[in-house]
Image (cartoon, rainbow, N blue to C red):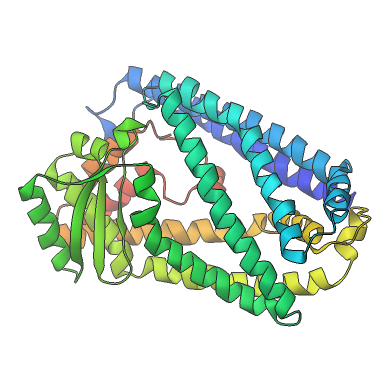
Length: 410
């Protein structure tokens, strides 16, 4: 009962943050801020407000549905029934794990389909973001499920093999495997997985490519290729990112971003990304999260040795897999208070990258213009509640970023 109440407290706390965010938006979202003068009119501001409200309500409804399903599964006896059915098959340890976890992936995917369809074809299309066709959505869903099945099967099989072969130290070996797998996926995904969903073409604008290469050379980054991704086939949202480990980078720009920004603004955005690399933000984040993961893995190992978790949920057959599911559920509750710390670190890194963008380009206005366009074109909420930001924003609110740049460099 205590665990049930704790989960409800966390869920209701999240809904309360949504309420605060909606209230703040309704109170302050009707007046264009000075930073957006000439860039946003009352009609667009109303559109931003309506889009944000609709997304929050959609998130609330989908979250309530998911929470009900999860609580029924854990507290309504479904986990016990499912666990007994898997155990009755008398399969090997690894096969039992595959038959236990893969159907849960498929069930989660099936339950999410109605919400995914509504979000893409109702909300995102209504506000001019989704260019997705139903056929393309079906193909993306099938490919995603196929890839997820392969990767999850690989992770489960190797993870359970390590548990079986090293019962006293598997927590360390599994952590090593997860760490290596994470790094491997960071390297291989841009070359193997992403091309299954998008087309990447070299940018034909030689002046832009030359400016990008010259800019990156200033910080010691060697650019292998500069690509344009056909994001507009699916969405009108804009983005840009680096891939690659070490000093050699592959730069990818959404075609939607190239269409909406001039060269100075694009260079400011890429200088911001270069700032993340130069300040070693990704490395610091990986070291922090993997350090936490190692501690969590050891604590999990100790908890999984006993039957306390199964007793809490009245699970009859004492399988390792049921313990993992329960532990994951409890972990989601325990992790909530730590979320603001990681979000705070991420926001600090974003501010550092903004400052680095100016140091590299000497063009504060280019970054400001880019932020204005990114916010305007993506219908970003300009008036989030401060407490909502603490728990949910990995980037500082755009007005805060613009004002900080102006205060320091203009």
